[in-house]
Length: 312
Image (cartoon, rainbow, N blue to C red; front, side, top):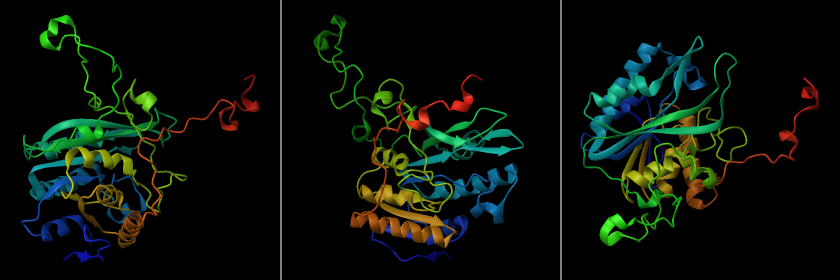
């Protein structure tokens, strides 16, 4: 039986234990409108050292997790699965490709494969440095929630009008006044880039990020927020089976959703509780959604070419 952590708020439930055991212990009637998570990448982080697996073992383990999750997903629900790559001996194994069939074989439908791009990531000297991860959005059926208006972006050409061939619409604005539908290759932290080259360009949570905790692989609130706004409504239930430091809980409760989180590490669950408490109290530091990614000015010292490089 999973160890139930103290409820930080009525809309938050944190469960400590092995993910498969906890999922199997949940009441059969308990369903979730959205399941969103970033599972461990099996790359040797501190919380993985007691369960390091070969790639085949890892994929099989996650396949069992997916099977348990699909049973917990409501008929009109969605799963957002954010993954990077497994690296071994300099070779890259893209986890979204390895895990796609785990969802497809159980009847789920892939609606988008979203690219999350960031400036700082895995450095390499023998291949290009890793600067993006992917988020797969699956639905259980063709009847699912998709709220476009809360996630629209500014029209690139708001003054564009229909041609004379459009009949009654001729001469009228051709775009939606509320904004356009974002593509699946987004940059929504920097509007000036978003409008010209839409990529999910969200800074990953590193040392000076305001959301940084002791968790080594924390993803930003902004990444989860769009999934929650687009795929659920207020009062819906959200599940994160690998909730870690509670990013999904913060994003969900911020927008009036109920959330259940699972993790085997009690320390991370305590941090998740604390972050939600601070959110409700108005004291949680988060990076504002839509804030432009910081770019150094040419006059900044860090942007100048070092004297040691000059003349080389």
